[in-house]
Image (tube, rainbow, N blue to C red; front, side):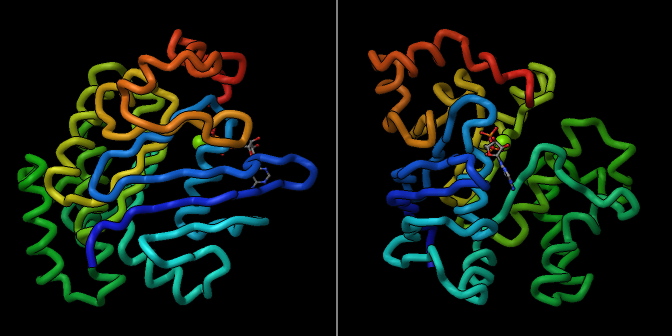
Length: 253
Ligand SMILES: Nc1ncnc2c1ncn2[C@@H]1O[C@H](COP(=O)(O)OP(=O)(O)O)[C@@H](O)[C@H]1O
Ligand SMILES: [Mg+2]
């Protein structure tokens, strides 16, 4: 197995009478950093949940390489999710466990590894992220940046082939955002996973992404290299690039 390409075809999803995804097509490149950008409330998290099998589409197809997963059995999604890791905004660490045990936790639970074997791997991941000294600390004793790195170490311990980041820098100060942005590049170099970053931070997308896709009105209106975006004459893209990413709905984040 290796990092897959992910392809979405004609994805439709409504909540009650509110259509959120309206025939969305998307191509995510294997072993690359793929950004999905767009305004707050535009459906980025909803899209990500479909890719993780946490929401079922009303209509459409979701391909991982040559496997179509929309409508697949829960057991098939569970197997696929073993190849995925998620990094959410707050990192969601366990405050009562040491850093070492936080990082070892997925191995211990998902693979029933004993603490000793899980601990060895956890130590490796922490060393890679310059956190070897934090082994015995509780998350609450660390800085916000260190906590992000611990969360990343935990996400990487299962050696995922697909890595999802949902708004990794929202709410962080600029310095910390820069550190987290650095971690995204580092993650790709270490794992060669298919990295998918959902963000309304256009500057980060243009700086870090191999591929960018912009969601607008329930569809992907443009996908391509950062250069494609800089050159685009599409009004919605221009508006977003001009700094309207905080636009009328930005305060909702
Ligand atoms: N489980 C849900 N039930 C009803 N509405 C939802 C649900 N999840 C998301 N939505 C709605 O879908 C729209 C898109 O949300 P979301 O994907 O979270 O936006 P983004 O991540 O781009 O900020 C919003 O209007 C939101 O209120
Ligand atoms: Mg969101």
